Every structure is written in C-alpha cells, then in structure tokens.
Amino acid sequence: MADSSTRLEQQYALFRNLSLAPEFYRGDFTGFSRIATKAISEYFNVQRVGVWLLDNEQRALVSTVQYDSSTGEYSSGTVFPVEMAKLYFAKIFEDRSLPIHDSLTDPVTAEFRESYCRPLNIGALLDSVIHCGADIVGVICLEHVGGPRQWQLDEIFSAGILADQLGNVFALKERDHLLSTMEDHNLDLEKRIKARTSDLEDVLKNQTALLRGICHDLVNSINVVTASCELGRKNPKVDFFDRIMKACSAVVDMTQEVRSFCQFTDKYKQRPALLQENAQAPLLEVCQKSSFVLGDRMRIKSIELEIDIESLCDVVVLAEPFPLVHSVVSNLLSNAIKFSPAQSHIEVRAVHGDGDEIGLVIRDFGTGMSSEKVAEIQRAVTAVESTDGTGGEAGTGYGLMQVKFYLERYGGRMTIRSWQELADGQPAGTEVTLWLKRLYGQSLHVLNSASSHDAA
Image 1 (cartoon, helix red, strand yellow):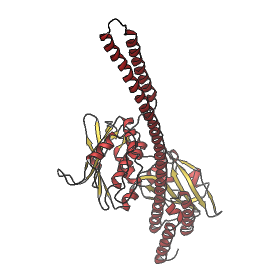
Image 2 (spheres, rainbow, N blue to C red):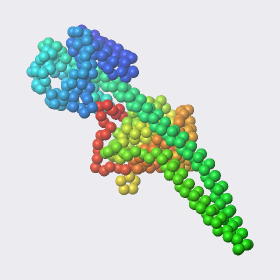
Image 3 (cartoon, rainbow, N blue to C red):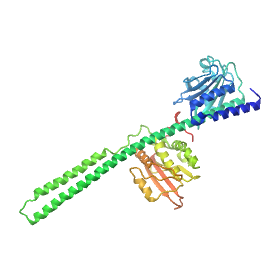
Image 4 (cartoon, helix red, strand yellow):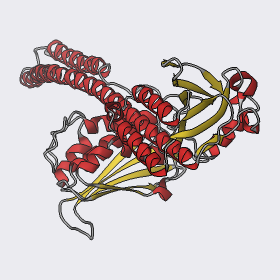
C-alpha cells in the first residue's frame, strides 16, 4: 500500500463512497453488502470478502453475500454453525474485531481449519462484528487467500468502521420492515373496527325501528287492558277477561321479541380471541421498540422522550409483544407526539397499582383536553372525532379503539388525566396510564430476535 497519508485518504474515500451509495439510504442490506464486499476486496487487496448474518435462533452464521475477486462472482447461503467453532464465536462476540494473522496456526481457527480454511487456501482472517443497537446481528469477514498476513492497526480499525456501516443499513432495513408491518397491521385492524362499527350502526338502526314499533304496540295493549278494566267496573255483567288476556299475551310476546333481538345482536359483539399461550412482554423493550419506530416523528418536532429505565427494567406484563408495541403503546405515544409542541418532552414510566397490577404512564406536556373530551374518549365504543395536532397532523379517530380492543384482550384498563392549563401544580398536558397484569419473577427478552432488533 502507499504511505500513511495516502492510505488515510484512500480509507476516507472508501467510507465516503459507501455512505453515499443509494442502497445505504434505502436500507437495501443485500444490495449494499454486494457493493461493500467488492470495494473492501479492492481496497484491502483481499480475494474473498463475506457478510454473514446470525439466524433467528442464533445457532449459525448464514452467508448473505460472499464476493470472490478471482472470479468476480457473488454467492450466498453457506451455513456456518456455532457448534462448529465455539472458540471463534466466543472471541468474535467478545471483541469488536478479530484479526487472525495465520489461520493455519492460530488456535482460534483450530475447529474449522481443516473443513474451511485449508480447502479454500485461506491464510489469514480479519473479522468484525455487525451491530444493530446493542445486538450482534452478524460478521463481516475478510479472507486472505495464500500464506499468512500481518494485519495492520489501521486495517483492523477500518474493518470495524465498515462493520458499523453495515449495521446502520441493517437498522434501516429493520425499521422499514417494522413500519411496513405496523402500517399493514393497523390498516387491517382499522378495517375490522370500521366493519364492526358499520354492523353496530345497522343493528342500532334496526333496534331503534323495532323498539319504536314495540313501544307503540305495548301502549296499545296496555290501553286495551286499562279500558277493559274501566268498562268492567262500569258494567260488571259483561265479561272483559278475554280481551284482557289477549292484551297481556301480546305484551308477553313482545317481551320475547325484545329478548330474541338481544340474542341476535350478541353475535355482532366482537369478543377478543384468547391470548396466545405464554403471552408476555417486557415493558422496557416495548417502550424502546415504540421509541425506535416513532423516532423520526419525534426528531421532526425536536421532542425528547424520557424513559424511566429503572422503573421499567425487568417488568414483564401479560400481553402479546407485537400488538402491545404497535397497536397500544405506539398509538398512545403517537398521540402524545401529535399534541406536543415542538422542542418539548414526553415522559414514560411505570407505577405500581393494586396487587399484581402495573401501570405504564405516558405523560406529554401539550395542549391537554377538556374534561368533556376525556369523558367522551373513556366511554366511546366507536371512533372518536379526531383533532389536528400542534403541527397540523391529522388522524383517523380509530387509534384509541385499537388500544381499548387490546386492553380488553389483556384484561387491562386505561385511565386518562388531562390539564389544559397549569392546575394543582400540574403543567398542561395529558397523562394516559395503561394498567396491565404484571408477571412476577420473569425477565424474558421476548422482543429480542434476529429478525426484530431494537435501536433504542
């Protein structure tokens, strides 16, 4: 390679060109990996460069892109089990980068030397871990073909930076996937809520018409009874009991009709399906996931999210993680962002309730709501009238219905307090508390998987 200053310029050019690639900003991880592996191969003068990702169970590395400069071809799909190289995985997960100057003598490669290094004539390795947030999601591997190679400090440092660039693209890919999934999920739920609302409106129309008719007929029948009693008192010789019995029978029939109608409308009530077995969600990870998904909206309005980690840490509640994140917490956090002014903040914390009840508190310092609006939201069974946010953000009015739907499913509840101006020492804003069942003695990382990574 050239002298030190030239190498620094070349490194800078490599990082800059990769960061300006369209695939980088699109979150196209595979496309960016193809560009990066070729560029890295040329800069480091390494024949083979590969990008490997951990599988969902974190039991193996799977090749996403493998570039070979001797042929100019790309390949993928090779599986490298953790069991095949326990010492290697222990080392690579412990350090940012792992330089192996001689793969045929280094003890780290002993477990896969004969099965991988020697057949491919790999004389040296330089590997760096790819992170997404705090999670390790994969490895970038530089494989020098031929004899040993003494990796330089600047090469080791550069490999780490390139792994970080891959981690950034991976995070963008995951965020886009989460946003797309959440949008599809919410659209589906909104359609179901709209369909239910339409069904209920039809039922209410039929109910109104039926009740009007029944009330009219009940009045007529009661008039027959009272008139017959009056006539019977005036003319005891005439038997009015048949008329009275017929009128009373009609009242009984109409009562039965009302009962039948109630049974008919019961089938329109969408009872939540049973919870998934062992449904449990760590509140801290739920809040971090929602923060990740809505991060761009907060940044646009310069809103700071203050999560009380100490109160949320190790708190696991009875709920399914995905709906709790995207249909409950994200909906409420989205509302808090919507009604918060620019350059304000939102607080999220956990509070203890009665028994095993835990409250997730989301407090904004926005415009607040009137007591009438709070009461309307609490008693609403269909969409509430949506109000534009402080930045002109529009809404559908169905978000809170989704929250209520899932809280009913989890056996939870929601309380709302709001202040439109400073009162009782409380600044203006709204505080929503989700009350859920806490599962004691559990600290499972339900949301942490290879396909769904936090970037809190």
